[in-house]
Structure formats: C-alpha cells, structure tokens
Image (tube, rainbow, N blue to C red; front, side, top):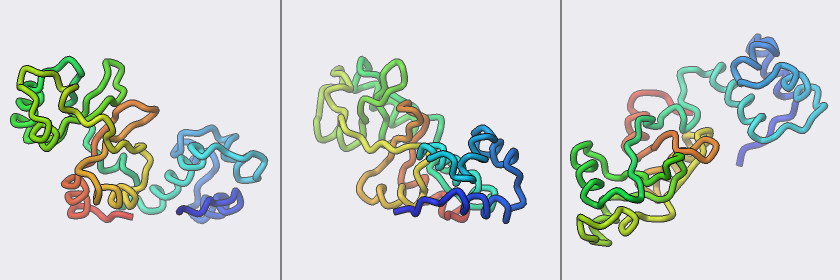
Length: 187
C-alpha cells in the first residue's frame, strides 16, 4: 500500500528537484493553482490529481525508470468486436502472433477478451461469433497503475488490458514486462 504524501512533503520534494510550481504543473498536467493549494494543504486533492503530481515528480527524479503501466504497454492493440467471427479471431492471432485479443464496443469500452485458451476450451465453430468464446471478465487496469503492481497481477493472468477513462488504450502481457525488465530499470 502506498503512503499518501502530504502537501508539505510534495513541496519539499518539488524544491529538492529545483522545480517551480509552474514547471511541476506542466509535467503533471494540472493547473499551477492546484499545485499551490495542495502544497499549502488548502485543498484535499482527488486521488487522480495526487497521482498525476506524484508520477510527475517520480518521472522527473528518475527518468530512466519505468514507473507506470503506461510506460511499458503496447498501444497499437488489435481488437475484436462482438459481431466478428471466431475465424476472424483465429486469423488475427495467427497472423499477428498474438495470444489474446480484447473484444470492445464501437466506443472502445472493453467487453471481454478472446485468448488461445478460450478458443480451444470453448471450441465454438469457426463461423460462430467471438461472443461465444470470449471471457467476459478480463483483467483490466488503469494506465497509471505501477509497474510493480502489474507484475504482481501478471502472475495470475496472461495479459492486462489497460484503460484510461474506461476506454482501452493498451495491453501489457507477461512478455512485455519481461522485455521491459531486459531493456530498462523498473522502479
């Protein structure tokens, strides 16, 4: 469990990095006035705002490290729709050397996931719809989740679907994490 930093802690951290409030606001994507209010503890910030500030400080402090799932996820995710056939899913998996494909709505909301194992286990006819073979409760995580937490969750599942504001923005597989471990320092 992460300890929630106080406004005073954030101010000391920012000053130790020789950042102005304006520079931190640019890095975090929040208004400078919010940074000022958080540091003086005039407001109790939303957890999403606090996460943006802490992530910006962490990335500025250690730019060589991978901090969040957003740093390691695959963003050009091939996806399926409910009306796609099982044959379409099989073709995309084979052609792209992919072991799992998310099933999404036209708006990009996650509805499920089709994996090699779900196709083999459920054995629907190739002309059937992916809806018949998809798992309806895939592992879904937020783009801001730490790499360490993603690593813990990948012990249980083959892939994590990554969302931002409830829309699919990426995917992290066990192999993506292994590649990240090989290439960069993870913090």
